[in-house]
Length: 573
Image (cartoon, rainbow, N blue to C red; front, side, top):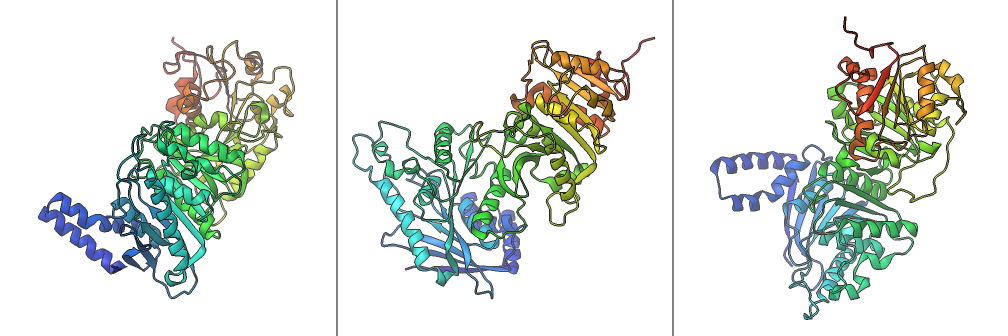
């Protein structure tokens, strides 16, 4: 048994940084440099996040009788005798290649040890080639599965030796490693499992592997498997996203906890791409299921839409622990956005049908957030449309959202403490959601309103009527979808009756009642919403010219202004 130990301290890290500089200036052969610097790169990556003063790395521990079956372990050094959670890292490579020494996996080994986990990176027997109907090596995949399972058994057997709580072990793998990680999860061998671009089934009816459902996560669609987090690029050419989505839907149907983050990206999503999304999601997932008492986590679930939007701040949708029946759309790096923007304005959003889901508007709401806003939308997080029962909501939920974000703005330890501007709050709603906004029109903290494919006219809805128009005290914009929009006439009646505040009516004749919310970045409705919010909440007066009839920006729209406020018609003398 060969064991190689290294103790990594702050002083050691500084020495390594100096060593790297020497290596670079000496122009050593690139291949040799990559070999030498793999673990050093990992250390550099973790400098900004580590909490440990010291870790011990032990390499090449044999965990079963097969020569290939060795693992590395990174242990946080501490005087505490308290057992720690563990993470098992499984490399990818199509089951026939790859190694735990890959810089990505070495990075993870060290990084998560620095965060207080005992981490293990595993090698396993590799297949000789992909099986064909004529070959007889199909059973080699079973060797991969059995080896990774035996590594977890070995860790549990030696748990106390390495300071591990055997009841708190998670796993991670990418590609083939993702498959092996999820297999640990569906068999209940780990507490939780993460898979990046994981093959959940072979997806080839002619492959000998297709005859063995027990080798694939799809063969374990049953209740009470370990919680899972699956990460995948929507343009993955290796592992088909539709097969992954099919697995997730089937797991949800039987009541399993499977989080799925899909964003624009290739097969390397969660490996060396998309890390701005995937690493925070992994950190939160492991802390939630392995540490459980992690005080820094404010959110339970993340979703990435449209690659985070087209704005300068990558945005995500979050299910917050203290507001689980809403979705918060916000810049992922909210502190970075505030450094550039100052405190972020707030948008409250009510959905069409007055329903408890914003999934039909997530493209637009993500886009708004990516331009430096925090959006609080009614309705619990959904991975897919109709993946749960949807219900109608009262108009009072907009005020619940407002009170929550105002409270979070001053609550010590909150992600939003000092991050949001409670003096710059807007409310928007689509269809019946627009009526919910008007129902709350008199709320003095609202600085502008966006009424989307909605209007009261002579009707009553969601506790609102034309009487609420007299309670308006801030600029308002109506956005409609032409005469084919069932709300067109009501929007026209409302606009013509509003005299006490600046009002704009923007109509896109081809959009219909559904607007463009489902288009990438919310389409032209999304662009106009951002422009309006920037004008009203950020003081971007250059946008005022976009909201008059002679504007050159929204040529497919018919725009009217009542001449009040900044959106005045240009007059040529």
